[in-house]
Length: 439
Ligand SMILES: NC(=O)c1ccc[n+]([C@@H]2O[C@H](COP(=O)([O-])OP(=O)(O)OC[C@H]3O[C@@H](n4cnc5c(N)ncnc54)[C@H](O)[C@@H]3O)[C@@H](O)[C@H]2O)c1
Ligand SMILES: O=c1ccn([C@@H]2O[C@H](COP(=O)(O)OP(=O)(O)O[C@H]3O[C@H](CO)[C@@H](O)[C@H](O)[C@H]3O)[C@@H](O)[C@H]2O)c(=O)[nH]1
Image (cartoon, rainbow, N blue to C red; front, top):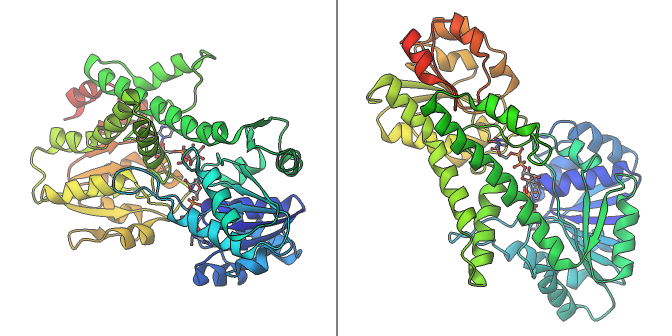
């Protein structure tokens, strides 16, 4: 199948490369010439495990090309996939300007029947808007379809090649047949539904996963007060098939380019039809507060933060990605600086992205994990990179000026921590017990 993918971000690039891997001929378009140049030279503008090799292999096989010219990309395409960004506007609603611009450009470049589908996460009714925009510029026949994307950053290639399900929202047999044929090699679980339901499935899925995270974070906060261990609680809950074990890891709140934006967008979508989505509003509020649990623990352990040096391990919103959009580290570091402390930060991959989003003279940018820890008054682990989870507690303790370890991701083994001299502050585990022993 000949496919054009508009937008070569985390979704567009991964999808384009994976469709090529399935044997399709894929043209990826981006309006950013620097990205296209990097891709043409065999590079990858994002960090995503496994993507680079796959991209090079398919480009060399002649199945994958990159261009800034949408007409070149869609001239032979049967399927055009829109995968541009839908970032949040200040009020929380999704910014549709990139989708609408892409629809206009597609409309101008159409040269025959094609199926145009929207993979970006978009409010209900967007596909109809895209159809209207294209129809206002192209009078020939075409179909539209919604094809929501469920990949996770860090495991995007694996998720794309092994999806739990494919959702196709279509109002024509040609569109649903074409998309079914494309995805058949990946899974039997292909759900064909109407366009509006497909658009809603994406937001509802992300909102539900975010709800699970905020729920377990609140349970964790209660566990801390009653002396229970949230990791045991989550294990016990997760064995109930009706609940499921995934997305029950307590931590410092969800971040990333999706959950924060999509929860707020769904609240807006509901608000637009005069529905007050109270549950989701609480999910967002709990998530915001959870980030500050790290600051509370710093206070608990150090008293005033003024003049203190705080090591930060992890800037990316999750491991195995360079994406720092809505990373909890941003608000935590800002707050640490406001309180008069000096953060010494380290992340194996996301330093550059973080620094271009937020820089401050109080921040010391370190080149190794242990450099950040050296002589700091506390270490805060914010992202569970393997390098951190495998770190030696003895080395950490020896390097710190005060033996305070705030583990925002519950990565360390409690028995090992007990054998160390560290004052350990995990999430939702019996902090007081450890404090009594070691502080
Ligand atoms: N990142 C994820 O993990 C993920 C997962 C599922 C769904 N989504 C959704 O997919 C969409 C894309 O997300 P992303 O993270 O890949 O975004 P991104 O910001 O990483 O990439 C978007 C790309 O589109 C390009 N672009 C914008 N307008 C264009 C145009 N008119 N023509 C050509 N290129 C254009 C930009 O230059 C950019 O490279 C969003 O709606 C997002 O919510 C993202
Ligand atoms: O039990 C958990 C699971 C995740 N997180 C946090 O939640 C955030 C999001 O993690 P994850 O879902 O793994 O990554 P994303 O790449 O943001 O993927 C989500 O957002 C994408 C964009 O819409 C969807 O496609 C995916 O299905 C959905 O999982 C991260 O900050 C994680 O640290 C937790 O705190 N506890």
